[in-house]
Image (cartoon, rainbow, N blue to C red; front, side, top):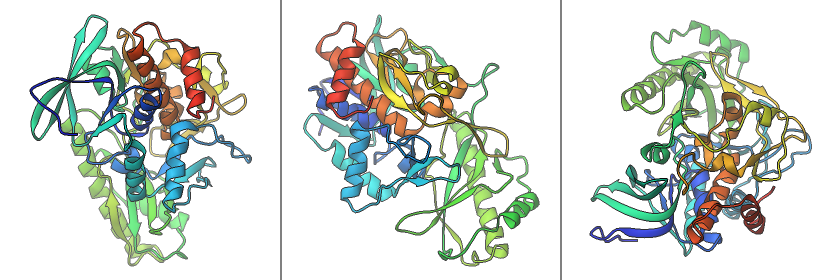
Length: 424
């Protein structure tokens, strides 16, 4: 939609960020009968799945032999749309033992375009948040920027699905990140390796020896000491390699750019070693990285309830639940790759409405990894399957506030979630 830049545009709800949480929020707004603007800085939707090469959806299915689905609603619509494009969305077991859905980024881009291409959702790609305007305990407008210049958009309510808590931070919501009380999780650079025949096996002993021989120097990037995991991708048959972690705050452009450059250099050097030493890799080449790092941890907003490790690890159920999470508490630090702590109870936990409502701003809700939580809870909550669930709830809560700007109740949000096919 072409925008008149001389006049402030107005929507019921503005959603910042076009990843899993943002897509779910925008559709949730629309299905609740309100009008949404979805803002995304890249020229495509999908978040980490398309902009960082994280080619799997985690958090849709409870760990265990039964493979029970725990995220429906908009997330389920995305899987169905991918299936309609001829893409296999059957869950597979990751090397960690958890169930994941493998992705093709180009198929996903088209699927997500189709999901948001419906009346009631305006989607602006190549558009970046640069400011927020606050009036007391509410946001009343945001400033966006594209190549044509800056412009303002008003809304009755907002959803921060930026991943890095950009909107909440711009609006003055207290935020917290790594520091003395909390260690930031490592980022990763994902690498697609082509030219390796389907029958070629990764010699794990040789892989670990090559890692020991590699001097990463004083860079921000390091190889996982066991070499990481190689997973065959559908359709392309490329290898998806998760073996390089990076230390970065994920926010400062100088720090983030240096980490990306170090990661690409290390990937290039190590694939050269694989080509020379690993049987079957003699024609291996890097097909793709990124286009940005996979940032796990940068900044979270203070919300009206802080989800805790106890909530996750005991599998706590709640009457005010607006989303289910089931991914283990996955923590990344050191050079050994992730550690996992399983979800207790029935294998899933509930996220309460207060956990997605920003502190200090009545009309801002949060979806995805920017939600306030402690370190171990964050290791579970941040994954894209759970982001679909929290994002959809955030969109519905925002739409209900836009219609009636008073306290939004969990029962009303839950009823609308169930009507939209969510799983609670």
